[in-house]
Image (cartoon, rainbow, N blue to C red):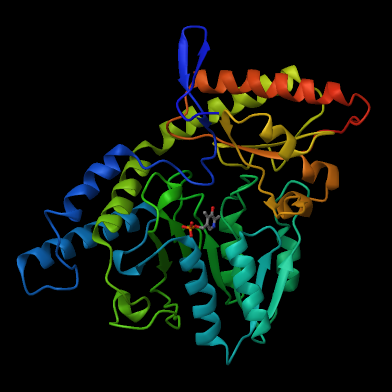
Length: 407
Ligand SMILES: *Cc1c(COP(=O)(O)O)cnc(C)c1O
């Protein structure tokens, strides 16, 4: 299927493929690109070279961006460390805290459904003698707070729990988790790559000590992110990248001025438009879910139906594998969350962790809706998904069995 094919649906002609993978990455907002452009050529200064005007201009642009990011999450600008993205932020938070405080406390508690970069960082720490606890989640994808409370000991250094999930969209009870950690003198880190700019976040109201942000999940550029590091009470980290001592010594290297400006602008736009955008995108998501479940039987919604991101819908179609559905829908960019190897298709470890069975885990599809999605696109997707699932099921009428709705 070519990149620029058009679909005629009534009077609307749509550009194909339709992009519904906003949790994987978002297109950069044109307003963000506009704000970045001058810093590639006309304003080339190194933000750390303050001996001349061009350097100071770049420095000021980076600091203005830092202030915008800070105000998006209710923090002070001095608490924002620029990184290359949420993967690096997560590594810095967990390895940095583990190394700094490792002589006194050595246990980290996290959840089985975290992003791979948290899981892999924790496994790395485990191989270096840290005690890592991976908590299970409930069938709706949410953590049971009593279970968390039951695992905290005098040896617990840090709890790391994602704010909003990249695959199933569920939003954890961040304030309550933050309070619990604060009560026990445990650091609380949250990966907010999917949450910042989508739902209201306040690091003080939510008792967050460390928080990871990614630019390309909120219509900013790829290759930039941030780590919020609390100053009062002060959270200490060991640096993971050594060098010229930039970013309060926590992350050396010349800051990419255009990318920093892009992230700041993306945060500004997201906060400005948050309520209105959440409403519009949530309505599109509900329309998609209703449209598909009106036309098809045995559609399972994965993840809590209420505590979830407005732009996320994760469905399993009983009796079908996600791979066969996706390959029949080259005109729609969706994902399964599965990891494919040359010989086998691994079902999503996240859906598997919900305990709904292999069949459901094999059949999960994530529809990610965002800023540039239109109602005409959603109507097209409803029609294409419904007819495709029906015809795939008709080729094997006996394979699917009735399954109850989750939630
Ligand atoms: C995308 C994502 C990451 C990785 O972010 P990068 O900026 O691409 O490194 C980490 N955690 C979550 C929840 C994400 O959605």
